Length: 449
Image (tube, rainbow, N blue to C red):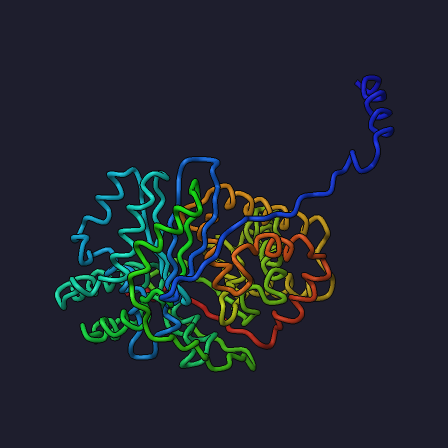
């Protein structure tokens, strides 16, 4: 085997260096961006690798645009937008798309609401028709009865996701601990139960008129499209819609942790759970990517520091996870661990504190950081392989546009991670994860009756 390799190595050594290592091509996702007269931003990207297209609409409104006492409206509208509009009867939205071989969905978070359709490229105009009709004519079929029906659906969803789910109320309490009263991240996207009950039909109509307008939306169409024809179709279906009022930016109060806050909840669970939380940089800000990698060093896989010690070696935790939650108005770093039967949360917390303090004193190994970067890079390219669904190229173009970096921010975003060094991770942990400024939430099993 070695004998056969020698001539090949000699041959390679005689090839000019430029031929051996061509300069890497810059990662680019070409796009066309236009703004209609009514303020709708349109972003078009051609990818003819497969004959499909994704239509992705972001309304730049989420629970952050709500106010105390009137929460849950953005998520309620995620439901109402599927209940029919002037020219699309209730139930027809899904039926029409399915008959064309497409599917669709939507989601709501703190800062945006999105809807998408993935379908064959020759059915593009159907998706544009459906989206334009509910953008412009949803209120034509809105009624108090329809609002009440979806309000009950959302309230039941909240019960399933929070009140009746093991450890479900912990995430709501954690947000209240991290963010000051009045901060839009202090209440849940799904809304408070009392607010959902109190919401009137007039409240809902006013919310739609303010936020679900062309000038408060961005439309991405990605896939096997002709750019000129697609732009003309967008003008046809959306150009007739009137602009709405200007939407004022969210101005949250300052969020600062000045000490350690500790609370204990009880729940109908069998095992105690510990959650630690810190306030961290907003999405794309310095330190955000480094904390993503730090979370992977701590809990990303069976060889990560916390998993190996708590779950595998000491066997005192059932599970452990760490993640950087990046959002436009601020971030948070969360570590969560569930104790094994008979094991104490105090012992688990000591191990977590030891590992974080070790990273404050000395940077992680280069191989730990590289492994985390490799995982991030692989996931990044996997998401770029498809144009549609959640977090495909269409959705990411919209996300980058909303963040202000320009729709084609792919290369810059990936470079935030690939350029990191172990000392960058250490610096971020020192700066953003202090031992004396954090929240500590414990969930204990209810006492047996």
